[in-house]
Image 1: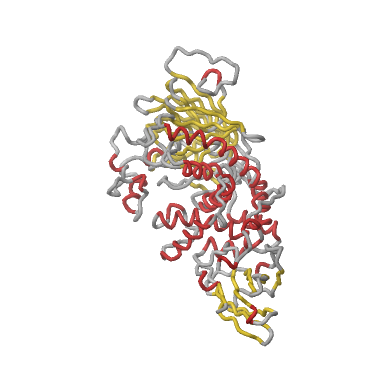
Image 2 (image 1 turned 30 degrees about the vertical axis):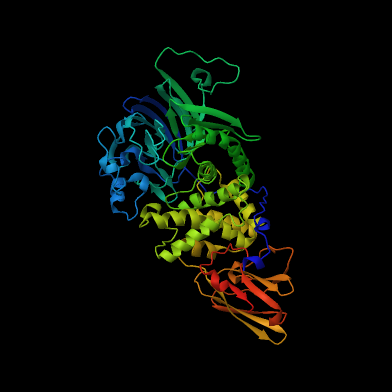
Length: 620
């Protein structure tokens, strides 16, 4: 049937947007200000640190306890992360050996990771605290009243683990230090309460705030990551301003001073062999690229990436909202690709397509997670899925992929998940999926389809307006699923509660069929059937034997609205609303049956119908 469908998806994916804004006056969120000084020993991978944390309680609640994340404690034999690798059916291959045994279980005392707190005071008074795996439980010396501030002073030590997952030392690429989840990080408290989730290599939720970090390390190491370097002319290494001299240092170390305003995490990476390149994006941030040049092929690909990365930055700024910082760093490190505030870690580089695709995805996270900071542990599909959606569009344009449907792989993965009978609702906590496969597809693929299919429901122009308004209304906040739904409702004028409920809170599937096509004197009667539990509006394409085409549109009654004609070059007939309670639906075509060549449900392919075989009627 593909040859019969002449409606191009280029029209559907035209990206339109408009500046809209609104604020929710009842919303509140906590705030943190970190000041940290850290000394890193590159010989034994141990570090000492001090942390002064000013915590503002913007909640209406009095707090008597706080929690910190001690992520590095996960990289120890017997940790919860280690236990999860033993119990899950399909453990992450990066964290296991060739026999699928946990790599964490084999770490020796000088290879493990840890974070140890040796002193913690609240406003100068000692507090009681205990360590429970990757969580530090702190009983306060005095309660924090609503609207008040308190200061925590901490002394801590850490050891960087052998690189297993995201963080660590001496990665497969030979990067010395990938420093993510490296410091004691205050857990988030929001309208749902505390989110002190143990770290088992899944997702994150952080408190918005400002970071001031001084890092002392061997002077031969080049550092990159979150924040703006405050002392570039003392550091050099390509950070100094053009035409200025770099201060000479006689000692063995340098202190790098970074400040990062309004972020919810802080990452850095360091290696003595980093090449440091920069590229100014027109009407955008300065891009920093840090990578090793030991392998000529990898070096060439990282150089080739740079102008493409600038195009990606422009694409996302145009189609979501302007990138709000003046800098973004793309750094070789980690174990794949992982997003952080104002930066990302990306492993490898021998394959340019893979390098570009990973960069597109991780850069898109700068919007969908590091500006629109959802609780990833509870709503991972809003983070990974929305990123997958927009990065697929970006790759299609920037890499000139010419894909008819940029989301085809997401739909295939979702269909695979449905057929596996292992699907769990997207409301499942990221840590509580029974295996990695359903988690990954639910988060990335089904999450991407939430947006692509939303465009099918409300129209592509409204979808892009929704994304822009969502960004404008919720940047630097913690949006929830209801926020994206309400934004789409405001833009489209439709009621979309049914869409959010069925797609994210159940495993209901979409399956419509053309049940029967019969002659009705000079007309043609078409009988449709809803087989799946999830209802949808329907676009129906009719192709006639004389080569002409027209469409019919059956709105879903509980939408309380209709989308604009997605095929303006074709005649469209808007039919009566289809109540979701009715399993069947009939309508007439005002032409005889022998004039009809084919009838197709959802010619765009954007409705996630799990059985498209019954979506087509073709004349014999």
